[in-house]
Image (cartoon, rainbow, N blue to C red; front, side, top):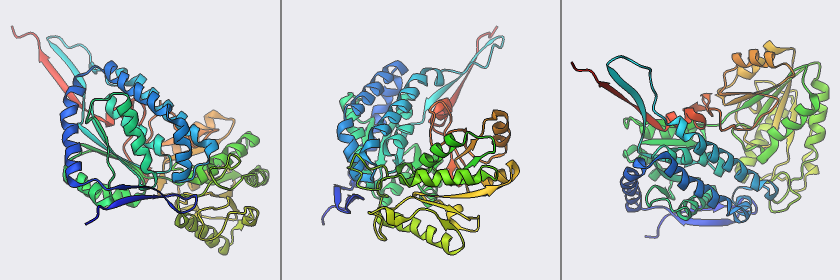
Length: 465
C-alpha cells in the first residue's frame, strides 16, 4: 500500500508545489524517544550554552533568505517584495527571547527568612509539540520553538500542509547550528496522527496556532493527559478612529493593517469604527489608498497583494461581501479594476464596505481576507461597546493623540493587546495572548517562558539546633 502523502498546493497556479510522505508510527515514536533522551543533557547545559546553539540556528535561517522568499510566494502567496520582512520579524523575536532567557528563567527569591534557604526554580516541561499555521509560518513557529529550547525543552514541529517546506527550513537551520540530535525534529503529519500524538501522551505541552475548530480538536485530544495547551485561534480585530487622531497616519496604517498578507493575519484589522466628525474623510482616504494595491502573481516585484491561500478561502470572503451588500452595505472598490480577481480564483481584490452593522457576518465572523467594514460612531462609549461585541479578543487598536483616553478605553476592552496608533504587530517584549474564542495561554515576553516551564520550590531548613 503506497504511503500517504501531504501536498502543498500552490495558490499561485493551483499546482502541487511540494509533496512529502506522512511520518509513520515508527518514525513518530523514534522522534519522541530521541527527544526524551536528548533533553536530559540539554537541560543540564547553562542557558548561555543553549543560547549559542539557538543563535547559530537563527544565523543559519537568515543565511537561507534568498531561497526562502520565493518559497514563501509559491507556498502561501506572499509577494516576494515582502518575503524578507517575515524573516526580519523572525529574527527580532528569536533574538529577544534568547537575550531575556537568563533573566526570565532565573530562580525566584521570595526574600529572607531566618533559619531557611528558599527559592523557586523554573523547570522545563519536557517535549513541546508545536503545531504551526501557514499564514506567517516563520513568525508563529518561532514564538514557541526558540523559547522552548532555551528553557531546556525538546521540540517536535508539525507545520501546516500549505507550508511544508518551512518545517524543513527549521530542521536545516538547527542541523547547521549543530543542535544535539533529537532536540528538534520536524515531522510531516496528518490530522489523525497529530491527534494520536496528543491523546497518546507523547507530548508534555502543545502549542497550537490555527482555527477555533482546530483548537477544539486539540483540547479534545488532550483530555485526560493533564498537559498544558497553548491556543492562539485568530480574531476579528477592531480599530477605533477617534475625533482627535492624526487622520493621515490612521488611514495609512489601517489600510496596511487590513490588507497586508491579503488580510490573512490573526491580528489584522477586520472592522473599523470611526468617529462621526472624521468618518467621511477617513472613509474617502481608505478608499483612495486601497485602490492603489496591485493584485497579481506574488513572484512579481510589482505585486502588493497576492492570492489567498486557496480558492475556497477567497470564495468564502466573496460570500461575506456579497451577503453584506445584499443586506444594504455599500462596496466601494470595483473588482473589475483588478484583472486577476475572478470567482473560483484564489486572487481576490481588496474591498472596503460601509453601511455595515453587527447583523452582518462580515462584521462578526472572522474573514481572514482582504475586506474591511467601517462603521460611524458617536463617541468612545459606542465604540467600546461595538469593539467588545465579538467572540474574539486578540488585539484592538485606538487612533488618538490622547494617551490618557487610550488608556481609559483600553481598560474597558476585552482583548489581549491594546494598541495606540499602530496595529498588526507583535512586540516580543510583551505577552502575546488573547481572550474569549481567541484562545488561552501566552507566548513571547518573560511571561511566555512561564508557560514553557513549571515552578519547583526549594525549602531548606538551615538551622536544626
